[in-house]
Amino acid sequence: MEFSGLLGVVGAEPVFETGLLLAGDVEPRDVRRQLSRWTKAGRLFQLRRGVYALAPPFQKVKPHPFVIANRMVRGSYVSCQSALAHYGLIPEYVPVIVSVTTARPGRWETPLGRFEFRHIKTELLRGYRLIDLGSEQKAFVATPEKALLDLIYLHPGADSLNYLCELRLQNLERLNLDELQRLVDLTGIPKLKRAAKSVAELARREMEEYETL
Image 1: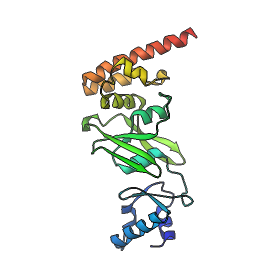
Image 2: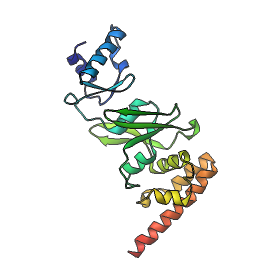
Image 3: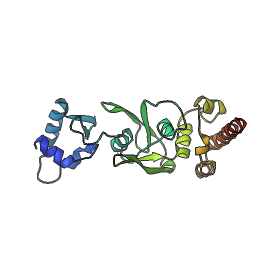
Image 4: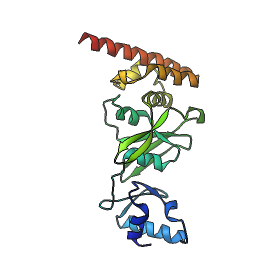
């Protein structure tokens, strides 16, 4: 396959997998050999085994980090600090894209960013949605409520009021506290029940501060 042929197959896909190129009468070893050559030549970025993105100037669209994360581990969704920052619930820039998955945890350093995948139980794999990221790109991202609960679930001591204060949570009016409680009740996890009370207390404090301005 010529590189022009690859561009024709990949089209405007921001991220693609080796399997996309193996349809029809092709020799898998030859395809993988070509991908390796193009990666070494700087025409492609290898994000992990079997997952690639076109390098500039061949990209028709710059891949959004959330799309990359979804493609790197199928069945995952972006959550925790990454989703909270996206929704404006924490002020800090998050240098690592954090996702959750029922598969094994992992971490990858790529030319397009750093990606971390945290493991959760299958019964907790809920509370996410497909969101529009612009440039005809979409990705599965936790709701604001689930992103906060995932973060609390995965970090020791994260249900304390002190920890939540250290997160510098903001714009808590964007949280649906009823939905937060609904998700907590579905889990039955005491740690998350305690956290829900702490979050409600922080939201109350933020509202009181706003009303005094």
